[in-house]
Image (cartoon, rainbow, N blue to C red; front, side, top):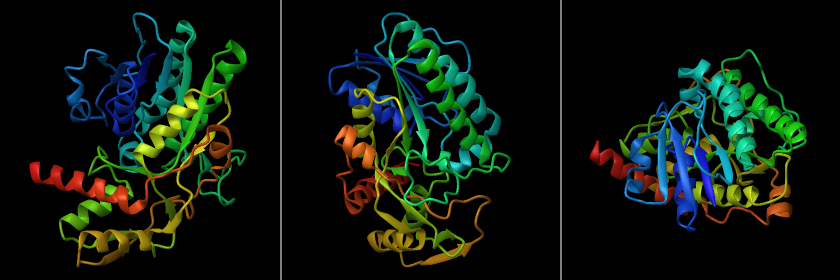
Length: 312
């Protein structure tokens, strides 16, 4: 196949490039480096089956030649990023999705949208199933990301119903691994960075809020299976092993040998109290579930961050 991946220099996008290239496909990646990094794709510079276009996806997109699949992963995705770039986040969810869908329609290609567990907001249903409509504050600071993705999902299915585009929607839950940016505000790089510097880990609130953590290779495998499936409706891809943030912080300190402990600070506005995917549909439709243990994934991630910090 020849695949077009927006956000291809981002955390997840760059891993997708690697995944498909390793299976002898051709990849065209697009990124404008607002939150992606050239470092994430530097190792592909001499790969003949890899092409790169530096461009903002909210501008008109032209991809010469045949395209078999479009994977739309362009977007600020961490709380720090979408709070720093609120208007760009809304534009990439709306105009960027529209443009990427236009490429898929013009090329007769499959289209896969990277959506998010944030479409559930601060959920009142646990675990979160795909038929849950969510509890989102549309005018809160996080609304720029939540609503951008909810709009993108609606637009994607509109293209499927109106134009017959073969669409897929993945709702991604907390994912971690190498190429996470240390300063992107997500809990894993925050905690690991603080632990490696010998600092106390900053826990919001009392740490009783829960998350579940998926290693990036598990996520990418689930995305690939969804792309090749015939499922048009959203599918959760995440790890159902839920834990409190306080427990997670204690685990990071234990693995890294950090003796600085934990300090508690205020909770951000609309910070979800619980986040845990129901992955019944992924298991049933894709024969997928996570296989990388938390400790194994953290070992790889901590080693990556330690190396990056030594080079900085």
